[in-house]
Amino acid sequence: MSFFSRSRTPDEELPMSTTAIERSQLTGNYTIDPSHSTLAFVARHAMVTKVRGAFNEFAGTFTVDAEDPSNATAEVTIEATSIDTRNADRDAHLKSNDFFAMDEYPQLTFRTTKVEPKSDSAFHVTGDLTIRGVTKEVDFDLDYTGAVTDPWGNLRVGFEGRTEVNRKDWNLNWNTPLDTGGVLVSEKVTLEFEISATKDA
Image 1: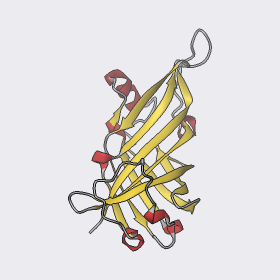
Image 2 (image 1 turned 180 degrees about the vertical axis):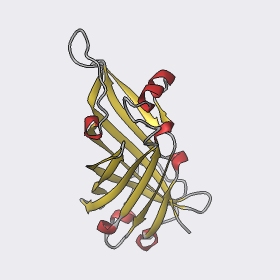
Image 3 (image 1 turned 120 degrees about the vertical axis):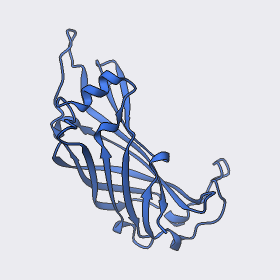
């Protein structure tokens, strides 16, 4: 069974279109659809709960080589000012020099450096993540969630993944101690992403 022609179990929902996608059709360039994708993060707050947020404005492209998936590449640009944690004061603080310093560094970027196929539907991805002008290598597992022809005739593919990073690696150092011990914001942050992309014509 090929990664690019993953079979579907009886309990799985049918895609928007049941038109079969041939392996050869997957090779090409893709543009991420931000309206159907999510770039999110989770950090622990006050040691007792978690705060979730997302970046609402981003753009990205990637390439797929169905014959040799290790040739895949991807680039993503994220607008720092689009950070959204559902709290205006917290968002303003995250945009300030204490965190993302968005006036000086308005964008975050990611670019792959290596893609390792692990199975028909799983990959290990390594790349450079740049925040506040600091570039650090990150790696994560990425799962292929399928390919369909959508109602508008686009060949659409999906991927999802997550990883954990230490925000201090990018000089996101702000914190404040708690009287009961610990700190207000965790250093460890979980990054979560769900990607929907359409093949370029």
